[in-house]
Amino acid sequence: MKQMDKTMDIQKIKLLREKLRVLERESLGVFDAQQECCGLTLSQCHTLIEIGMKGEISLVELASALGLDASTLSRTIQGLVIIGLVGRTTNEKDRRFVSISLTEQGRKVYDEIDAVYNGFLTGVFELLPGDKHDHILEDIGLFVDAVRKANEMSGCCPKEKNP
Image (cartoon, rainbow, N blue to C red):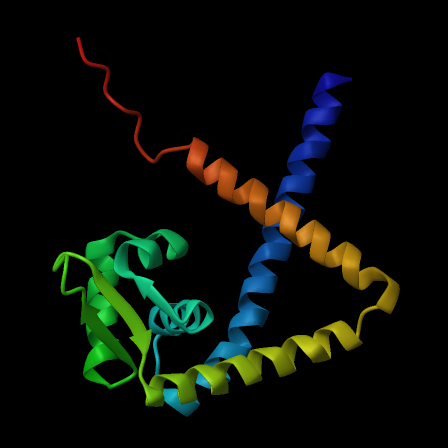
């Protein structure tokens, strides 16, 4: 009986992986259409959205929110600064602290991206039964929290033990 349960669980995992791949491809379709409008990479788009949602944020906080290394994110931020979508402000009291925010042009692009995604997801919700909306949001929240926790608990490489 245990072997049968394990086989069934693997089938569920494979089905989940398939559904997530389809969800990713279909979700990125709306991004592809948006990319043609503002010419951002996926990384720049995610970064711009996070900054737009927070208003003003430090590089360290932004890196944590996006699950990225600060040095990797610095390159993305620099690209957004160069094209005039993001500004950096150094704290006068602590020069190591840099605050990141959207420029006026960045806010316009953020608002455009936000409107496209809101419109897309409104259409998705309209295709679902209204009494399922809260359940879907709760279940996705639970799933995201579990994925985040699993990521925190696992590492790509086992840590060496000190002798």
